[in-house]
Length: 215
Image (cartoon, rainbow, N blue to C red):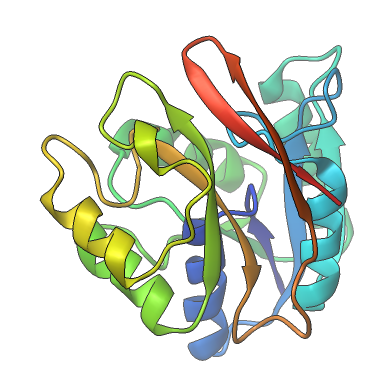
């Protein structure tokens, strides 16, 4: 049996992959959906080219799809079929505690005849974000919600100092599960090489600030 990883390139999906591999799952594919109108991952603002480089560094086949002009759900359903057509039996996700988000994906994945795997589910977010760093992954904060406590963290790498700030911030999910912040993982123990990029300008859209990473 082989599996695909559904990810936006961030720390939760990467840690889910790490755990899946350590338990013996044969993960062969990285599946990603991005906005066709911008060429970037929704909410993260990461260019699709960097996701392709990440997949290559992880040694995974890339299966990508975009949402323009179609909406997310039909694109996702087509992606599920493509994963199944390639002979994979399940999909690994990095969800943690948002039950309605997990339920939305799980219903559609199982309806498609695929296994739904959640290696991180139900664990304390602060322990998970520490595990990302302790395992040796390097993650950069590329997007923040300006209305929430992580707004000042844009452009910072996830390290011991930032872990301390995340743990003491009021009303902040340390993993950013409620959209407080998003990351791009660019190196770590499952990477054959680091993903290179040049930090560019910041931009603001609908109350969010993004750091443009140039491949």
